[in-house]
Image (cartoon, rainbow, N blue to C red; front, side, top):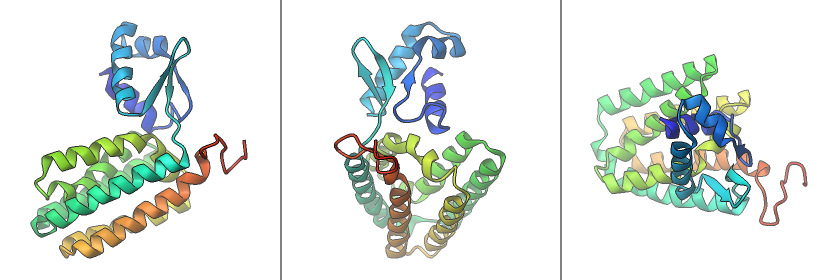
Amino acid sequence: MVLHYLRKLLVTGDLPPGAKIPVDAVAQACGVSPVPVREALRQLQNEGIVVNEPRRGYWVARHSRSEFNELQHITLLLEREAIHLGADNITAADVERMDAYRVEMEEALASGDLWTANVAHREMHFVPYRASGRKRLVREIERLWEHTDHYRVLYLYKDPHVQKVALAQHLGLIDACRAQDPDEMVNLLSEHREFAAATITPGLLDDDGVSAQDGS
């Protein structure tokens, strides 16, 4: 329960990158002692989402541009493999499910429900990955997504123009899945990730701790 609560705060931007995580406030909100909160935070720390500074507490990790781009690159490599393994297994029902998630995501965005939008977005993307039948591969992709989930609010959920472009890319990806065309699926996914990275990385820190947006 506590882990789910923290993930919602991260994804919706209530705990943005670089924010200190108030253990006592989280415990009070969840109706628990600080002990399970710290246990949940340790799990997030193991996932690379949270950092613990001795005597200062827990903070939301801030990836540098090089770290973020490396995570994107590794994730795309595994996604490409899953797509090529599963493209022939994608059914009409799978495509319908992807489109249903797309609609759910758009409706959630329109109502400001960022958590539901994030869940629907992930489920839509993972339909072709799960078609591969490689559970370990899919779990590894899920783990990598969790490293950057709290950055998605910066690119997909805030700017209306970015939303419009990203949602149009989703339609193309669904069409490629309908055609069971792995090469087109990979090309569209690459474009989608490049678009996301181009939108997110200017706000990240470089390796010297400087943001390109504000020079500080």
